[in-house]
Image 1 (cartoon, rainbow, N blue to C red):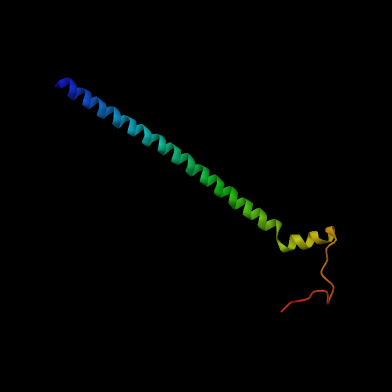
Image 2 (tube, rainbow, N blue to C red):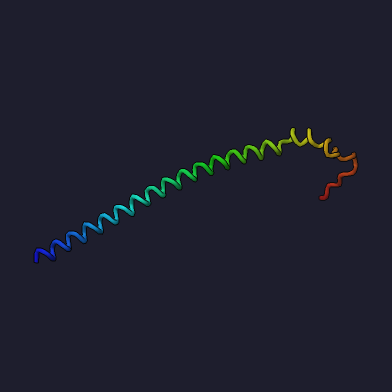
Length: 81
């Protein structure tokens, strides 16, 4: 009887140890994912800022003559109702 009790206690202890190990590993994984999310959010913010800078009206109007673009001639734009 004491041997069976000892085996049962050892099995429960081993199971608790394995559960604790899994919880710790998941904690590390979640921490890594949170760090990745923060990095990606920062990159997204920087890319949005760069896109806004590149598509600004002032920049585009400064670049237009280089590519042969100009305002349309009067009367060449037709507005459909």
